[in-house]
Length: 312
Ligand SMILES: [Fe+2]
Ligand SMILES: [Fe+2]
Image (cartoon, rainbow, N blue to C red; front, side, top):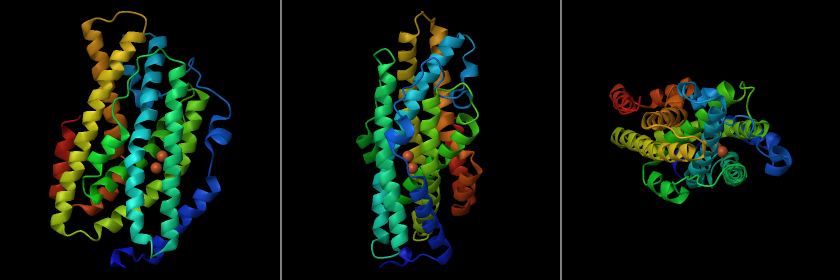
């Protein structure tokens, strides 16, 4: 048994608390979330706080709503995408607990089980939303191909990216989805239920990321910081391609012609929105920046800030 699998009392209590909450709030896709409902296309899907919709000043209210629905479909698909590699990494790190703290092991097994359920839910959401929209929507990134790239990087970097994602999930629900009164009821509920289970995941990410950090030498951590930067750049590559695809689809289904300047504004507006959703909103979350800041030195922090600077 490696020393890293020995868990102190306070961490042990946190794993136990995650198991307890996970059991208490457990939900089922059909019985609790969908409840026979469909997405209401007369309402928005993604809230204004995430979609950056105010920037699209030349769109009518109906067009803005349609664009929030295209973004909302992509938002669900992105979660389905990242949860593939998140689950694989969680199963991998659970190995350290096989013969150690059995409560920590149970917490990670439940985490994995929940992510499998979430992936199924997001696959079905893509089909349900698609049934109410014209053909032609494209979500290009393949979960297994993205997972292969992500999992080729160090565990420290993957856990850092995962912690970032699961913390922004929390922030998005609390700050933007919950307070927006104009959303499809089902769309809002999906992210209410998702948020509830993700709260435990974010705690487990912090525990596992810190545990992994404790076994790295300074040189290994320094390379892991480069890996984390590579991962953010890879995420941005996905966002560039998807904002282009979503802009094309929106212009095709909006029912009127846009001039070249408007088409460009739609594409760049979507890229800005996606960078906010999947990169910058999480980086600005105090819980994430505090956690990352506690693990790295000043020079490593500068490298990360420089890499993020080009995205703003
Ligand atoms: Fe999830
Ligand atoms: Fe999660």
